[in-house]
Picture 1 (cartoon, rainbow, N blue to C red):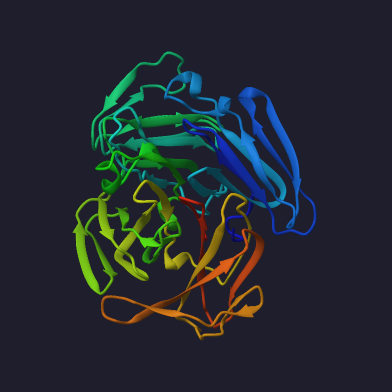
Picture 2: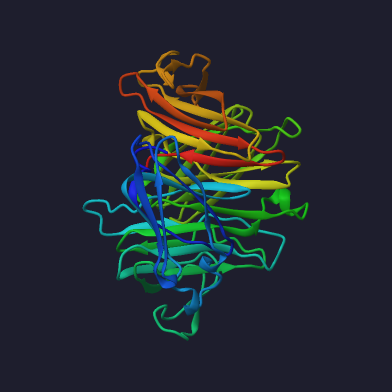
Length: 427
């Protein structure tokens, strides 16, 4: 959680599975929150403080958006509070931050892109869920695969139209309305483009997807992630490694990049090797595979989105992790960790070179001194990284005290056979 991920209004929705919300605050005083699902006349009230979060708020399976039909149009979940809170969603193998509703001053167009994967299981959907935050939100949908979409999402019994790859279909969603789009048969909807005139919640992922390593072994698992609008994208990213505790192995990771502009050049420097690719279109999806031994650096000449698919337990599981751009790093990040099902947790901190010294970054007031330099393809130092083992239930403050210094914090929670990842980012 960072102060930018803390807010008083969140719009959210469930895809084809239920799960739990964790609601927390940095305030030592009582903060009252409310969860509403208007179409079910559902309201839940609660109170949290810094040391007393609400870690297991179960969301009924009735709230799931199972299809694109009109019966599933009214499943939006609205979380509000009287003071800033942070909200995350988890379901066994994945966890991610629910991003707050935010209207950017002077912005009249918001753009989002889906990020997903494929599967050996033809009946499982590569999917995306749209949740309306404001009435009369007009959305243009440009898919990267052929998709069936309702002609009029406001009309009960509307026929579907087949929107072919690269073509556009326009719909209107109102506050709290939901639309699930997806395709099976091994499809991957990554790069599907959404353009709206107002802020929108876009949750993307797969019902039971896998990486190429998993597909050849006939493995898959559910994964989800809320994607931010392109206005928050950046050009510089740090990738971190992950050691699976079950067998102490370093498995390969898949990196997916999505471009927001035409003719975008992306360079990845990893394990001493450089890979540069130029993408001609604005919805181009790049896929790379690396054994990330320590840290890797991704740089683009135009803003991009970067997601990392990690493996654990002999390639049996993966999770999709949003990588924040360095342009979104913060001077200070505060958060609480409530990982009761993990047996080991650690922080992975990456810090900018501005104002850096080995003692400039304070974790809960103490200097962290064991740092690894991170290089770009020209062997220039672009950042520093470190890891800290932490308690599964604890509060944390990480501060870059150097002049103009910024940082990012990643939480890695390790279970017996899998990991749940939560990235704390500035949006």
